Image (tube, rainbow, N blue to C red; front, top):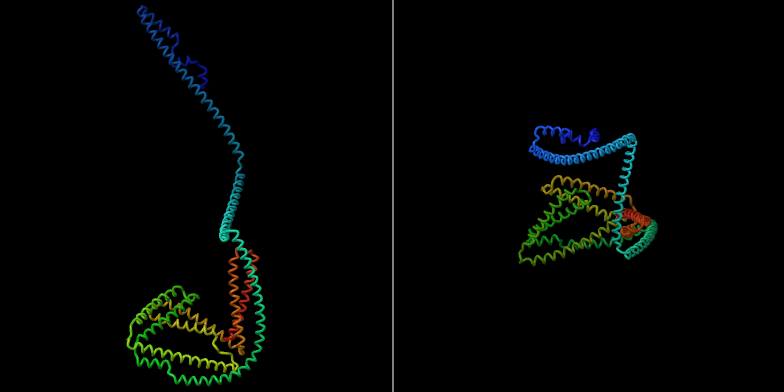
Length: 502
């Protein structure tokens, strides 16, 4: 509406409405009134001057009005341009609203939900693929590290050729070893067959027992002569007693040193037994540490006392006499011990002869039984020493009880093993002694040889593990298992023969 009013009215009317200019009739009416009042010349001049001033004012007003009209025209033009811009923007907004309405009509929530679900599935599949790729990357890195190690060992193609040649040579050696083991297995079978035949020849061995009777009679005569000589000779104890009665030099010191050395030997054997039981798992680490620390302290104390006693000087005037007498005592004691050994050997032969004569299995103590008896004695000595240390307050009650329980279990195990050996002895009445001894020696050597070859196979397998394929490696392992089975069979056979010897 404002725009239409501005376009219909001219600029002069707008200025008249605002009171900037006046109509010609109004101006003429005002001039007529002034002429009526005063028509004189001076008044006219004055009036003319006034008119000039009015004209000048009109000119200035006109110029100002023109300026104002131009400014208004410019503002009107700006308003028109703004109006047109607003109109175009409103049209754009209307088109956008129409598009939005169309889009809203086209939107379907179910389709969007399905699309989102499909996207979630794609994302989960992508994550799974990423995890697989990460695992593959880790595996690939591990293989690269292994390959780098192999390349570091190889370093060059020449080294690789050398390694391949070495592997070929070792494979040839393994094949030769396989053949040799098969030959040894065949020999072992033949050996067992021959052994069975020789067992049948044991009856002939009994016939030779009668020949031992004649030899035994001569041995008895020799024993009687040696006993007479031994009875006539002075014993080691008698000589020492004479020396102590005549020369009582350093007696107390030697007794103290001997006593301390005996205690040291007992402590050393105790520490060895404790260490062996700890390695076998019979003792806890705490009990082992407590016993070893306290006994080592005691051992150091005893050694320092022995060094102190040895550093003390004895009387010098009779030192040479004591040395001379001690040498004589040692010579006599060596003679007596040699005679005693001969007597004991003869007595043992006599016992063996009588037992063979009665056709009873030998009661000779085997190395295994001797070892078991020694272990049993060591365990008993350990219990005595620990009990003594517990009474003195050197070890705690808990450690003592723990060691006692474990040691009793260990002793019971040894006794059971001895009972098993005794039961196996009772089942054997006729023994081919010479044949079985030779058989045991042969089996021991064969077992050592197989153990050495088996160890070599283990080392070869470790070296060629990186270069040999799975099939060849399986063949090597089969060969190793066969060797191990042969070794076990030999061990069982030797164990059975050892029971016979025992």
